[in-house]
Amino acid sequence: MRLKIIEQHKSHGGLQIKYRHYAETLQTEATFSLYLPEAATAATPTALIWWLAGLTCTDDNFSQKGAFQKYAAQQNIAFVMPDTSPRGADVADSEDWDLGQGAGFYLNATEAPWQAHFHMYDYLTKELPAIVYDLIPHFSGQESIMGHSMGGHGALILGLKNPARFKAISAFAPISHPSVVPWGKKAFTAYLGEDQTKWQAWDATALVANVDGPPPPILITQGTADDFYDTQLVETDFLTAAKEAGASVRYESETGYDHSYFTIASFIERHIAFHQHYFS
Image 1 (cartoon, rainbow, N blue to C red):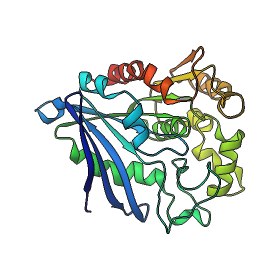
Image 2: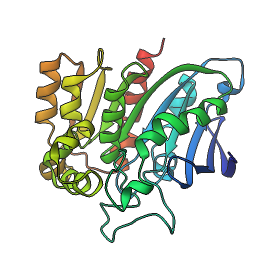
Image 3: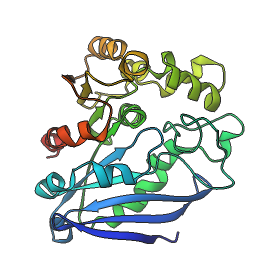
Image 4: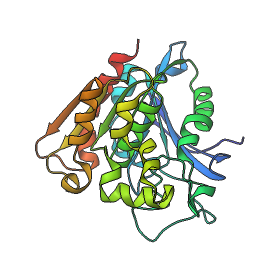
């Protein structure tokens, strides 16, 4: 595995680094970004938070607009930001902005032409962790996960499918019941096929009722001025399923906030504090 640094910037005493490597899982080159707080280079145990971005985004969106570095540095927490899908000239794509490259939905595709490269779940649970852990000088072994929109969906499903791995989950405006909303139906039909019973393995509302062990605590922030809320992001089904399952979910509705990174930057300190609480 050849890991190449594409760019590097100092931020709040730490380093924001962008990498490229060949991803065997995705069968193409991939990029990811990593923030290492200054204390991570000392003999100080450092926890890790995964950030999963939304539709059309890359690993750059959060690193450049998320305003998290100050708080990550204060708490000595590393952040890793993978890309949102496999990419490249040989990778299947769509003319639609909400399908294909930039819209991987963090699952393992089973349908042509997507199944050759779109294995984001395996990439994030098997290949990329082994790389990232070695890049943190004194990784504590503790990690959690957060994301936005499609990435909020990703954070929920990865966290719920791997409850022993992640200490906590948080999400901004997540697609929490993709099987019943247009974004999810379109992606799941393309990537997983018409059989909707197969969709349940990638739907947070179905997963929260069937977690293998106690589910990690969850924080969700949703803006009331989010243009996608009514058609894509309604949380009622997920919150009902979570309550019935006994999951710990804190849902916060923020008046006047929209779907943008302005909302994320406004509440990221609160989310980092939530995760820090569960790092021991």
